[in-house]
Image 1 (tube, rainbow, N blue to C red):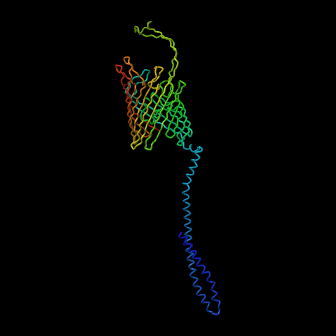
Image 2 (cartoon, one colour):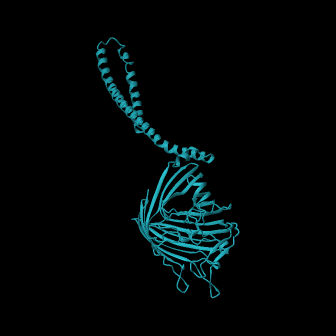
Amino acid sequence: MNRHTSAVFAAALVAALSRPASAQPAPSPSPAAPEPPAPAAPVESVPQAAPEAPPAAANAELEKQLTMQRADLDEQDARIAELEKQLKSFNKPAQAKPAVAARETKRDDVTAKPAAPATLVDDTLKVTGYVQAEYEGHQDSEDQLAPGGAPLNLNRFVLRRARLKLTRDWRYGAMLLELDANSVRGAAIGVQHAEVSLAYRNADQTPLVQLTMGLFDNPFGREVLESPRERPFMERSFASREFFPSEPDLGLRISGQAAWFRYSVAVVNGQPLGDRTGFILQDPNSHKDVLGRVGVDVSLPSALRIVGGVSVLNGEGFHPGTDATKGTLTWRDNVSEDNLVQFPEVVGLPGTAGSPSQNFTRWLLGADVGAELVSKFGKTHLFAELSFGSNMDRNVFVADPTTNGFDEREFGYYIALYHEFKQGPIAGFRYDAYNPNSDFLDSRRGTLIPTTETIDTYSPLLGFQVPHRARLVAQYDIIRDAEARNTAGVPVDRKNNVWTIRLQGEL
């Protein structure tokens, strides 16, 4: 501002000085008008040249200063213009970005963009897997064969699981195929999971609604849906294994999640993999089992995660009928026991008519809750689950009211606590209880006495792991039951504790 003012002032001063210089020659003829005095010429030339020199020098100096100031002003104007240009270039992205975001948000509110979600879904083929090899020691092991030829020795090395999983997701669906190999009952290779799904996804690509068909895990409780790869304990609790000898079954499932809410409903054959009733992955009756689970999964700011849910199952079991038989003759050497056929020892057995197959109702209810807490020492897990139902045992104590003459009601639960240290060690403990017949009554001297068939299992666990790489775990199962009898016929504990060492490696 000061420099502009000084420039204007200098220009005005130059203009003011230039006027006398231009007007000075005009009055010079007036003193020369009287020609008689001859010496006027030298007097006129000397005094006129002297006063013209100072204005010319002053003008030149002022013009020089004005030129320098103008150049300085031009340089400053150029710098100001450059700074304004840079400032505009810095402000343009910050102002344009909200505008673009606003346009995208508006477009998303009206219609979903077909290309954007597809780029967010990782549609590459993923290959994962793990191997669980272990050594088992059983307190009731014998170096004998059971009727039928099955070995009673259970102290052995076992390939418990060797699984390879292929998965691929796309915008509107997914595919999963998992193969399993094991040596539990001899070398076996089979399909563990085979799923194909259609999905409508949330913004974070989790399925809001997903329709799945194929071989998938039954959506009931927590343990059935928990992957053996992530579970630190060797196997599921006793009650869970009785209700579901193996996790997967064939059927149709609708599942999804919205924020913290989870849901899954399925219609399945009702004969899961590993079923002991003789119809594995088949369905001998037209009635399908309907089951499902609804729950929550909440992560709190305090590094605490709360999960839980309720489950229900309704279905029908199947009692196979018998074929008709013809009359037969049998010989019983019970008279003289001389290995000779005698007439009284030959007995005729009449034929029997066939019996039709029958269905029976079964149901199961369950609830589970759990918490995970992350601290400077690692991650602590606490979970609990209970289940109770009727005619649901499909493993060891197979429930069949047609044969038994009454409905059996089962009840089971467990509590598990384990901690994963940051440096690798892992320690835990689980207690589970299962009663295959909570209405059981024992008869002694003609009196019905309430008893219990509850099987209690205490399972401490110690191990070391490299997350998502390897895990070495040792577990000791202390089993308390009343499956044995003493010499007086009183139920006593059967000596059948189990200890297991497992090494797991992951792809």
